[in-house]
Image 1 (tube, rainbow, N blue to C red):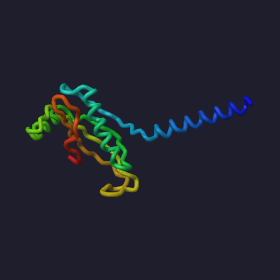
Image 2: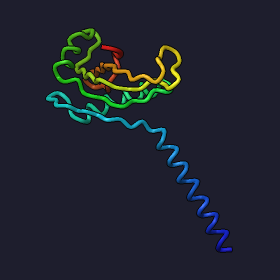
Image 3: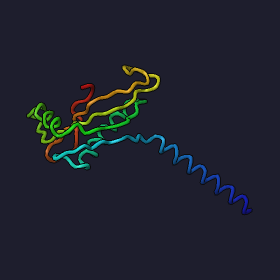
Image 4: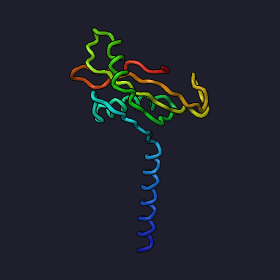
Amino acid sequence: MKRTIRAAAALCLAACLALTLCACAKLSLYAMDYGASELYTRSDMDAAAAVVANRIASFKGCRLHSLRYAGDERSLAELERLDSGAGYTACLVLDSSFRSPVRGGGAWTPNTEYTWSWTLARRQSGGWELVNYGYG
């Protein structure tokens, strides 16, 4: 009887471990370079990075490798370019490196490293919104 209980417990533990490993394999881990900023905290950058990571995750088969804060100067320049009527009070630019799906599909070149820039903006009391992204 004890052997049966031990075997069932071992089987249950193995199943839980397998499920945990499968869930972890779905996570997209990436490197984040915060650089130096007088405008934004790491928390600000993490919130913006989460928006970008979620967008890349929506590109079926793409895998985010890294994000890098493009700097205060570039972010301020992008804020000046935004529509003044939109009410944005802050802008943050992140540069990324991600890989396209192994087999490609759609407009993706198969298994290729892409480097895109992501412009995010927010209003006084809001969260980060993705306002532009792509090459450049």
